[in-house]
Length: 357
Image 1 (cartoon, rainbow, N blue to C red):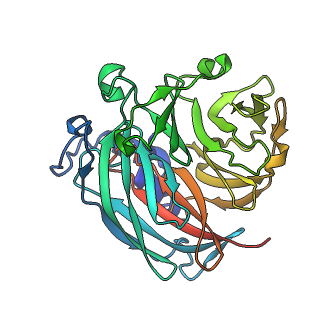
Image 2 (image 1 turned 45 degrees about the vertical axis):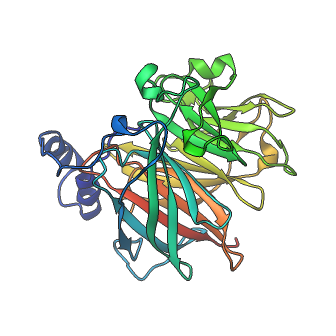
């Protein structure tokens, strides 16, 4: 779970109307209660998912200063949605995986809740979200992991066919679910992980998970990258779990960015989504593209940014990234933000086309 970023901070910094510190103080003093909502996450049935309503407001442009602009680095804006729901457990979305068509989705929240549903399109334009259901993550005992073990902070997700992996940040565990046995009602087994993974900082543990499919370098390997677990050189620690060459590696850290997610491109490269926040420089989002072939035990990997955005754009606390290929053959990147269950932040779903470089 990341530090809360106030929506008022975002708007204020974007317009330079007031300093960030003033907005932060105002946000802490708010204490405004939200409108009554539906069910709480702890009230969800462990035996069947619960249908919920999610509203979607279109985001027609990405640049707040130039609404006609569509090109941003190597990405072209396709459209976006601001999502909201009366369901009390909706929000905190920190992981997303789409099907091959970019329609059916599986998402997770920081409070160990599954969300499934369908994205709707008009041509290649993202128009809405439908058939959304919520369910608690279950442990091996069939009970919600938040109830028995008090586990939450589910920050990253990877999918390999019917197998789904979820990283829990503060307790430094990875759970494996077989969705072939009940979908979101499946029970999670604790995955054997390297001892060094369990020694990561409490709130800077695994934030990105990717499973490498057959036919690629490192096939069968689960790639797990921490948010800000640093090695002796100040670089971000990652792990290669399973596969033929397990071990640890590092991602070169630069410009104060931390890691919030990763995704594999159909072309084979690794994309790493990063974010930064400070009172002096504000909020920043970045994507780096890294050759998958550079990953190896003991390696320090790096790649040039292909996308950067600051407070002048429609961003929030972007924590989820996935890629798919649409019917026209274009590679589409989808990003999702974690609102930290705060009234002052937003849940944004953004889509971009990855352009040839």
